[in-house]
Image 1 (tube, rainbow, N blue to C red):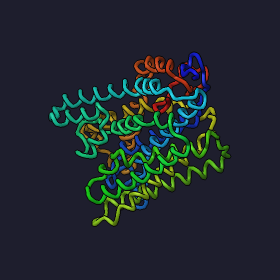
Image 2 (cartoon, rainbow, N blue to C red):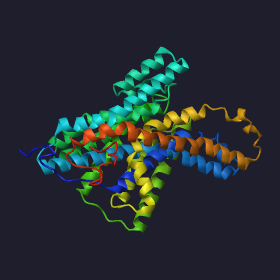
Image 3 (cartoon, rainbow, N blue to C red):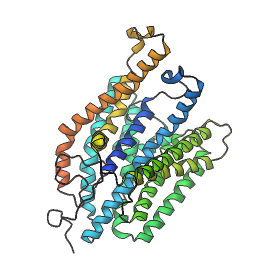
Image 4 (spheres, rainbow, N blue to C red):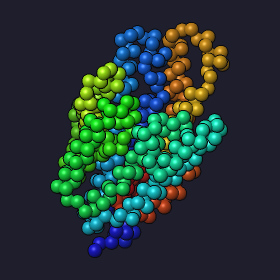
Length: 405
């Protein structure tokens, strides 16, 4: 049997700089979703009139699907690498897969949870809220939010890491033992289960977290990512600039429709039927797949290096951004004399600076520091267990993505 040890049997590499850009797009949309004020409370655009405010509301509600993009990309890349490993070595090294995942995900994840505990203790949170972090510690955060709703501790966003970890429980086993036909069948089953869950839960249980944070619902995005890889069969579709623009336009259209359906469902009374949510989640996954497809052959230009870099550190950006947004939001800016900004334009510009620009810059700095001084030792150790490299060849300082194996 061929050795799965990459030091003895290097099996090649799979690095697509365009996927780093996709990671940054996913992070940026999630960041804006958390940082922007929930409509209709938005002084950032209120002075521009009702028409712009309506467009802002439509834009805001599709930002949540940045998480759908994360999940779809994760499944696509995980299975692309695992199936390449199976083709190159004759098997999938399960133990090495889990070692890589642990070294990539756990250190920063548990650091984030430790910070959340510190904030909770400082704020005098109840024992119940502290106990909630126990669910997150064993990667059941998604199920906690589904059952109990949001915590008052600034770690709610880490529920998505729980969904990722739950996906990892079966991903390498499927890649190792299933044929392409069985993988298609598995994805079809996941889609049926996801939509069945939406049908059963959405109408019976109020609150969007009952579906949004439900792992079974979000697994539809993982199925979309696997299906995309199966259809491509490792090929890279060459896309000209116009085709790329059309793909992004289509993805944006899918997300905008999905966001509107999502908002309409949860704002209507009585609700008109969970079919709206089913279509919304399907369109979110389809739009995410289009974005990945559009960027697969993107090789990167000088003007895009910053986006590629931010994509590589997207895990640090994601873990830290929610804490930063929450902490900056605690500052009483109006009490600093800024209530004197009576001009709508000046007030809107100031709100944009303190709600978006400042948290983004702080998050960026924290992610850079995290990579350089905390994550790098674990990433170097992780390279010893790599079979299919997922970073630039010869670039020992490049950061493997959170979804790379």
